Image 1 (spheres, rainbow, N blue to C red):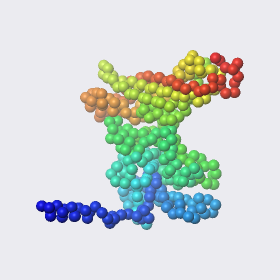
Image 2: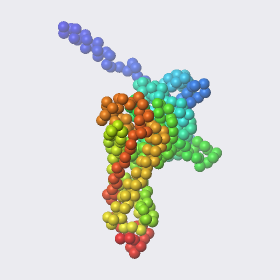
Image 3: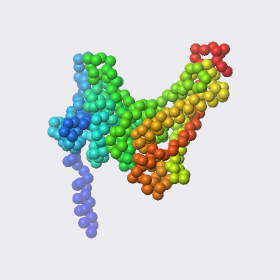
Image 4: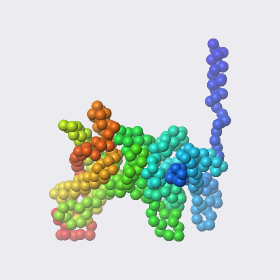
Length: 390
């Protein structure tokens, strides 16, 4: 018995050690970003931005400028797997997806549908579940070809935009969960390209967040502006770090506020056969600029500004509901999930026609806003005390 145990331990130990299946860094092509566009004959075009390791070696500074640190290669196929296999035949190194943090779908491709393309990323063992997903305004390959000034390559610039928390932040696992969700609707941030400062160098510019794209059954059905996108983020309890500028009634000038704590709660209810959703929004912010003639330390004026902030948030939410709920009829807010949790039997009866029920859901808003820190200065900058309303 002891002899058998020793034999088994020795046999197992032979499988634990060694580097027989190792892959050297010098043998792989590290993908930093990928773009997928629609091509002719029902094919797709896969573009990958590949890191050039030797660009950081000694002598990378040539001709008075920094040597390009990435290159873009592309191939076409009937799907991503087919395009990737053809792309691999044109590269001397094995493609490695483990460091790819950015995936961009071209606008035309997004309109045709991206569900099947997400399947490859979900099944392949290398792509990161936390990689960021986007739709481009135009071709995705154009974004990868940009020569950005602040970042080393365009893929890094796009990723940094998500890190700023100023727009939608959707990862691969988020997109998969939305496609598998009760509403079958999804939303992705949209990347656009700034006009170049030098027309002779069209690629020397930067990407920026344009807004968001709404998808139903995997197909893009509409684009939302940045203002409406912020309303979507309020309803999804994903409010961005941004500045809100408001104007109170009968007050000259504007006040800018920086919300630092936001909370949105969805409260579903079914009363007399009517489906209702109460959206409770609570926000707290700091005063960062006072462009009025008011002393906002006075509770009377402060309350007036807080009411203006509440009205601004309500206006944003109503605009968002009008465009998304009644216009696109796409439940990207998670209403279906909330009703399913509270009323599983009732939701089971309408889940197959939720697209018809969702636009009819009566939504009521309850917004409360408070300004916690009005700042140390009681007198607005540039004014004397006599010009300020106490």
